[in-house]
Image 1 (cartoon, rainbow, N blue to C red):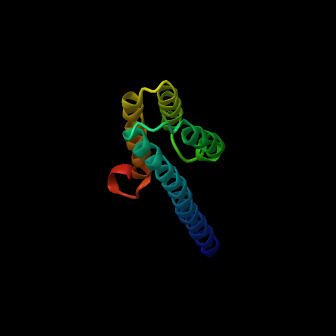
Image 2 (image 1 turned 135 degrees about the vertical axis):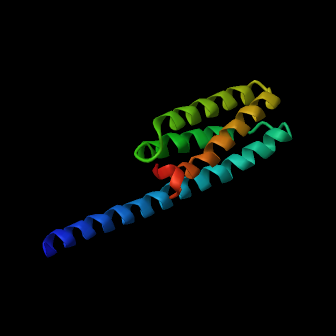
Length: 125
């Protein structure tokens, strides 16, 4: 009986610790992404060509998303990929208004990802 209880509480502690570190990791990557994206959005509002910065974000995202696949729904990752590429293409064509629209969609998607993992009643049931 005692051995079973120890194992139960050990597994529970591992799950809680894993959830904590997963949350911290995802939030840190999303914060990093949001900071870089904010610069690109501001430049797009000023109609500055910032396609090189967006290409750097795309390269960073391609490296980071392999680990994030374990924590973030695959549809969200696919949507982020698509929005970055669409924004980059539009920016390279000089269509800053349309690029800004896609960048705002991307920003809203990125901001919503951590909310999907908050510990609350709606996410549990």
